[in-house]
Image (cartoon, rainbow, N blue to C red; front, side, top):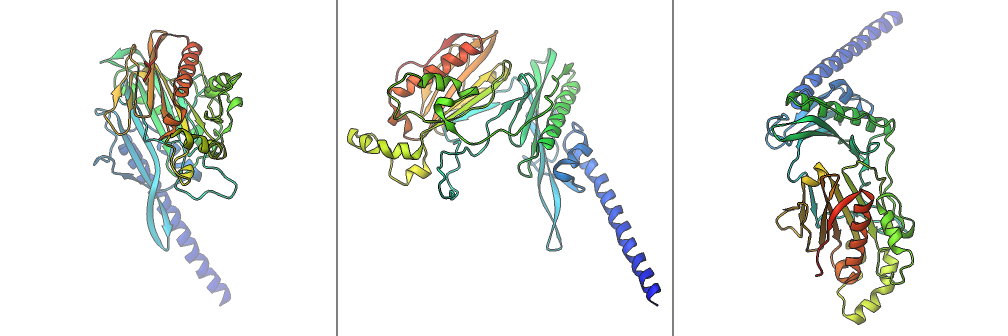
Length: 397
C-alpha cells in the first residue's frame, strides 16, 4: 500500500512539475512575442528575460496611451512589466524599458533648476549629512565616450549614420533596468541591448550605422561626495579653482565628479556645502542680512551647485529651464542667466557645446559674486580641455 501511495504521489508531483514547466515555457513564448511587438523588434527577447536572474512572464505597459514603440514618431519608448506572486495572486511590476531618439532632437536634455541632486525627504541615519551622497550616481562615459554613457540603471548607446538621412545624423537607444540597481553583469547586458537597438533603428531608417565597441566592464559609479580640493574627473576644474584661494568659507567644500572622456557627449559635477560648515557661517550671513532660511532648511534645502556640459548632438538638443519657466534652446554664441541658472556656449571641433550650471535655492544669494567666479572657472577649463573655441560667457548680473 505504501508503495502504491508513493507511486501515486510521484505521479501527481511529477504531473505538477511537468505542468509548471509547460506553463513557464508557454509564458516565455508569450513574453518573446510581447517584447518583439512592444519594442519594435529592436532587442533580443531572451537577453531581456535573463536580466535580474531571469523572468518568464512579461507584458507590455501602456506608455503615452500606446503599447508599442513607434519608430515613425521618435522619441518613443516601450516599457514591459514582469509578473510576481504575492499571497497566491499574480501581480505585475515594471521590469525593462527602451527609449529611442533620432538626433539631433530638441529637448534631448533639459536642464531644470527644479531638479535636485540630493534626496531630502527620507530620514537620514545617525551621523549622516544630507550632502554626503547624491540620490543617483552621475552618468559616466562608455569607453572614450563615442559609444554613449551609462548610469546606475540606464545605458545609452549612439549609432552614428555614415551619411545623414532626412536630417537625422544618429540614433540613440537607452535601455533601462526598472527593477532596482542592476549588477555589473546586467549593466553590460543593458549596454548590448541598447547598442543592438540603436543599430537596428538606424537600419530601419536607411541609415548605414555602426556603434563603437563597448568597454569590457561597466563598474558602478559612486554616490558619495569627498573633499572638494581632491575633486577629480568632471570636478577637477573646481579643485584647481580652490588652490590658493583665500575666500573659501561660503564656497562648496564637497565634490562628486564622474570620469571624463575625449569624445563624451555629456559631463556633470556636483558640489555642495557641508551642513556643519553652513551652520558656522550663518551668524555672519544674518549680520549681513543675507537670506538663507531657518535651521530646518539645512536638511530640506541643502546648498549645492551642479554643472551640466553637453557636446555635439547632445548640445544641439540641450535646453535650459529656469524655475518652471519655458525651456530655452541654446545655440553657439549665446549665453545668459536665469533663476538659479547660468549657461555659456562654445564650438568644439565644429560642433556646438553648451555649458550650464544650476544652483540650490538661496545659495546663489549666499555666494554673491563668487558664483560668477566659479562659473567662469568651470566654463573656461571645460572649454579648454575639450579644445573648444568661441566661448561666450554670460554678462554680469
